[in-house]
Amino acid sequence: MDNVPNKKASVESLRTEHADLDCELAGLRRLLASEFEWPALEAALSSVARRLEKHFEFEESAGYFAEVLELDPNRNRQVERLHDEHSHMRDELRKARQMIVEGTQREAIRSLLNDVLALQQDHEVRETELLIDVFNTDTGCGD
Ligand SMILES: [Fe+2]
Image 1 (cartoon, helix red, strand yellow):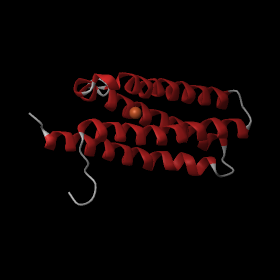
Image 2: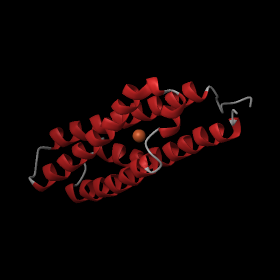
Image 3: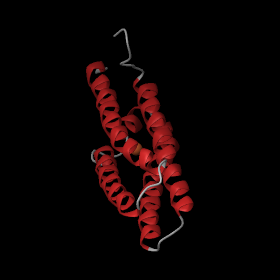
């Protein structure tokens, strides 16, 4: 009844996907910490927006946290909140692109994008924890 290998594979695949994504987001983070050139920021933002969209589609493709909700329907609000964060981050990235077009102040766009990066990082941790909690499994060291 309990398919532990599949659960472990799901947690592992989410962790791998998050690790890949983090590498890409680190480039934007570094750029924001520097005296960036606007065209470089625009290029980095386009690339991050594309990558993040691909990531959200990966997570949403089979129904966002459908397996989790099947096992524990009481997690509905938690899942809904995480899902809403995808929309929020998509909106914020669109806003950032518009700010570049409008020639917004460096500090304003830096602050907006750093907030998105911080939210994504925190969001990833909560997604992984939710999966581990509900699947009641861990793939950490010692397995
Ligand atoms: Fe997510």
